Every structure is written in C-alpha cells, then in structure tokens.
Length: 331
Image 1 (cartoon, rainbow, N blue to C red):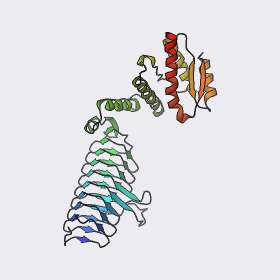
Image 2 (cartoon, rainbow, N blue to C red; image 1 turned 120 degrees about the vertical axis):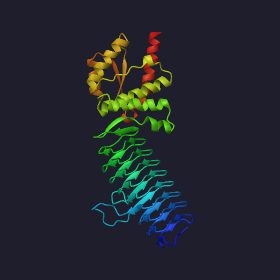
Image 3 (cartoon, rainbow, N blue to C red; image 1 turned 90 degrees about the vertical axis):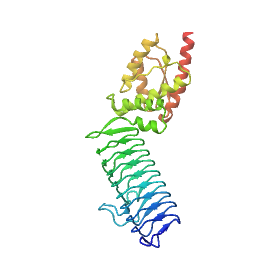
Image 4 (cartoon, helix red, strand yellow; image 1 turned 180 degrees about the vertical axis):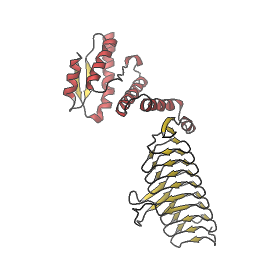
C-alpha cells in the first residue's frame, strides 16, 4: 500500500504488499521484500536491501552515507535479512570500500536509538537493546544479546551466543558463549541461561563451562589451554568408544618437549612398572629432537612420523592399539 503522503522514487523496487506509512522517504536503488511494514517518517536511502516481513518503526534512517572520512561516494549497500524488527530512530549506515556493505541477519531485533555503523556484520537472531552502538567494521555472531547502552569499539568481534551487560564499553573481542561485563570489560562466565533457552543440553553447557574455565580461570596461556582442551576431548571420545577411563592418562603440565618427556616418564613409572615401549607421534621436522628428549628420560619410543594435520587421527588409532597391548600384557 503506497501512501500518497510518502515519497517513493520510481527506481525503487518494492513488493506489492509492502505497507508504507505517511511522510516516509524511499530513494532510488532500494529493494524491499514482501510483507514489510515501513512506519511514518522513515528515511530509506540509496543502497538499501530489505528482506521480507520486516518492521521498520518511525524515525529510522536506513542506508545513510557512512560517517567515515575515507568514504568517497562508492556504490555500497545495507543488506537487511528477513523478519527483522527495527525500532524507533535506529540508524544503519551503508558500507565502504572495506566490505562494500553493512549486513543485518535474519530475525534480529534492533531496539530504539541503536546505531550500526559502516561495514558491520550482524548475525542471525540477535537482540540489541536501546541505545546500543556498533562502531565501524564490527563483527557480531548469531544469537548475540547486547543490553542497553552497550558501545562496541571498531573492529571488535563478538562471538555466537555471547551476552554483554548494559552500559558496557566493549574495547576487546568477546568470545562465543561468554558473558561480558564490568569496567574495564572482563569475562564473567558463560551465557548458560541463553544456551538453555536455545536448546543446549546440560552436558553440552557443562562442556562449554569446562573449556571456559581452562581458557580464562586456570592461568594457562592460550597454547597450554588449547592442548589441555584437545586432550580432554580425546579422552572423552575414548571413553565413549569403550576405553576404561582408568586406562587413559593425560599429562597436562608440560610446556615443551623436554618437560613432556619427563612428566610422561614420571606418569608411566607410577602407572606401569616397568615403563612400556611407547609410540611417539610427531612431525618429520621435530622427530629427532623428540626422540632424544624421550630417550634421555629412559623411555623406549618408536617414532611414528605424520603430517601435523593428521596427528589427531593417528593419536586416536595408536592409543587404542597401545591400550590393547597393555591389556594383553596384564592378562
């Protein structure tokens, strides 16, 4: 329905059942999908691509020129998905030469007075509460919730299912599944309530919680934490396929190959006397040094050289083989 008091440029492509209220302005090079409602006093400028069944409330300005001094009138766009609700006085700027577009995913709710700057990418099913602001080039994942008055610094990333409390100044990336709060911004746990609402099982939430603790509460650096997480995932998989948990030994303390050899020798001396022969899985580049470290700690090792990308797979196969051999020895 076209209101006679609204201005719609002849070059705009608007589906037949779009409702346009009075005093709205729609410029050239605009596409609006079926079932969308455009409230009064909305301004939709060139380059807007609006999906189906969206609701845009009065006072909003969509696809305005970016507030970036480098912008040189390039032909850029704003792409808004389906079923998006944009409340009063929201401003969304189109892209620059960086990404050439600003993107809002499906099923988002952008509440009143929010601002989304040039070249931002917002995922699906996000909720931005009143006065939340994204600076340029921000990346926001799916199912992200920003409470009121949140301000996000340019080039920051916010991961899937994250939650940021009201009034936060986001000057650094927020990992997936995490709650961020306080000033300066810090991580204060996982978004367990949001995950439960979205159908995550208790076991999966507990698994995410354990990973969070390793990364952010145990004083490990990222490399150490990732190695421990990898070991724990492998351990849980081995248990699932029938390996008794008592037969699986994880060595979490080492920070280099020498320490790995020393701690492994210590663990094996306690759990298996005498220490058995071990399969040492390593890369072609690293194997000479690795063998020397393990032999220095009186461990009999048989090197198994693999491309690093395949190490995880062969660790699993060879570990199962090793445990079967151990059972035969005990029998």
